[in-house]
Length: 420
Image 1 (cartoon, rainbow, N blue to C red):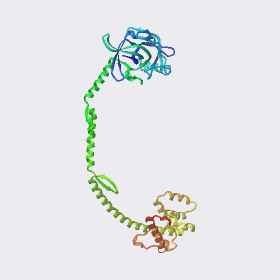
Image 2 (cartoon, rainbow, N blue to C red):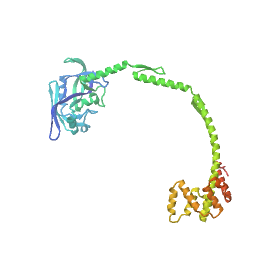
Image 3 (cartoon, rainbow, N blue to C red):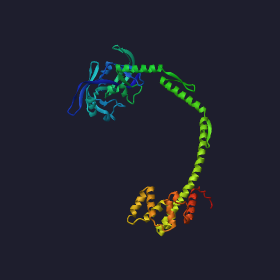
Image 4 (tube, rainbow, N blue to C red):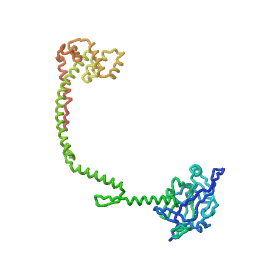
């Protein structure tokens, strides 16, 4: 049985030194192929032996197809033709193609600058022919070597510059490689492939059986089986812990937890309730004290403000914050020229700075009546032994109104009823 047009990629090499032309091209002779039994790697990794008999290799019809074929950098993914030759070609085989003992020699011309650079600087000097054949199933022996097939009707397509040391022959299998396409290998490469195959066979012998819960079993490498069994043990341990969990109602949400966690949570909730009661009581007492103190200070500041501010500013006092009111008192006692600078300092200064400035101004305000004098005592109280704690008589109503406003602000607002 013959196979039509399978593709082969054989190896060759430069012969002697190359000549550089005035244009920068390289001219040289090379051994491009030979006769004998060739070893090829099939697409499935197996090895086959094919005879390239001198009658077929040195056939004039075959040698003429080698003349003037394009040279490429590595084997292209498709055979070279008129559509892709411009992009792929880096030179060409000359017209001089000749038998040389068991070899076929040929003259070469490389014209591409990058290909020339790789030849000169990277020592890319190995060659590989790409061609098609008619493969005949024929067993025999040629010069002591057995073969299973014979190549006939050899038709050359291109000659590739390859770098065996960097990539190796298996790295350059084209994209179009199919069951009939093969790449030549050398005996040392055959040893590497055999070693690799032996390692793969040894690995298969060391496979460990892994059983799944479904009842199926698979062969796996020892390290894979070990990882699987470890993962399975961790899963079983997690399942045991999960089986020991109970369902607990957490603020209306059902959660799974342990009994110990439930007990700890209940104890924590009890402590939180106790602390919450204490906090509420403490906040209530502190709030009343804070309101009383704030009302006293507010009333005192408003009384002093009434004595120094203009009528229009006095009418706005109720809407002013404590800070703005204190600033207004300070600025009222400042000259017009320095008022802007003082205002900036007050805006940028700290609360303590504002209070200190206010206290200084308040001390300088003439005490025109007992109400002002009493108001100062709230801002700058004397020691307990030197003063009493009575409220400002004429400020009682303002104090009550301000305290009631603070209490009203702290109460939650009732939602508005629709339709009112």
